[in-house]
Image 1: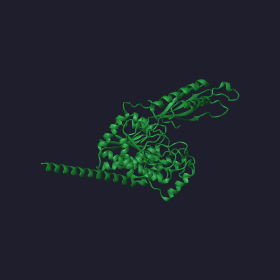
Image 2: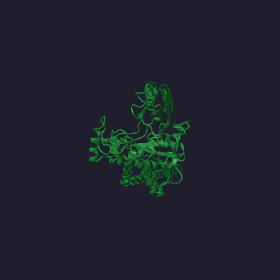
Image 3: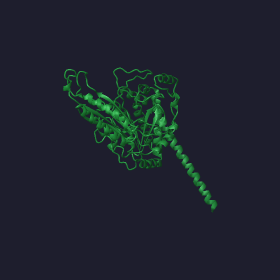
Image 4: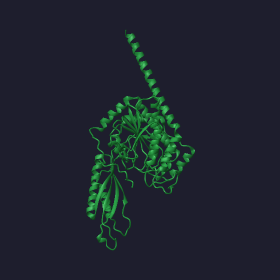
Length: 481
């Protein structure tokens, strides 16, 4: 009897092992098919990305960029709902039915003041001011490529569920995703996947800074600056006094805090006492509560500056984003897929481009070979902010960075713009799209992975009830004006 039971147990183990091996083989085949689908679309996706690079539309003005991505998704069988959350350029593209619902984020806004051609020397393009210094033309296109690859598997009946591509405008200061979270657009989503262009290959394993921004506007009285200055009250004096007070305050706030500003309007002529002036502020801190409390101190400084200069002041909150909630379960899974895909290899021409571009860097570059490596999971100091943070408080979220720029390139630089229009950028985009697709396949085929990610999400979020840092204001559609 014991021999019989032992035999049955062995047969059961062998059967289970064979079944597991069969499942692994099936999933690997699906990943291979998705990766091949993305690679076969290289030229088409390159064309889309370069078109958006050329449009270079800033936040909430991305009419052509959004339309191109929407059309691409529609032509591939997606149902697209445009103008969501009160934002004309935001959209949600959907294919499939039922659970799980996996979403991919797609950004496409450019930055002002970074006009640059795709060459190794600083060469602005005539009659153009904005440019993709953060690579969002690649971001949006790569995410669409991922969505289409997953849609094809759903259409063939090889996986079941729903894929969504969220077109998310104005990440650069406009907090587009915050309005989409606030509107409840992610309520039915199980997991969100995203990526970002970079100078290295790594899975996001570090949080971001919470951020609150506003435009402070001072109103004075115009007068002849020489003949009758006593009759005027300078709005610019209000701004400069405000800035001075904030700069003094830096000594007395947590050292991790970042405060930066630009004077967007300081008057028009030196001999006219400015009756209007405006300054645009960002306040960042790793903790959202600290970001909010420090922002309130900045507001008090503005009020004091207005009082001291005899001017009036009001302010408009422009954006507000949460810190980023890391999901280690999902990050570890994405890391495995990223290592399977690998980095990118440079051609001789790209190596030459890299070495020439490095000459413009302020510090030594790590070298083009780093683009071929995938960094291990690691925690590092992160001084950036993203509206993906708000998404991460609504649903388990995971992301990666892909080397779309020559290693050593700074984001928000003309060098990043130049790289973004080359095959260096396109190849990095394809790497990201493949990694996201493979991660999505694991989520579609492994319910336990989603369950574990959700359990971790609940623990990480704790008792915190989400509340948008920008309050109940409507989208700041003209914040770039």
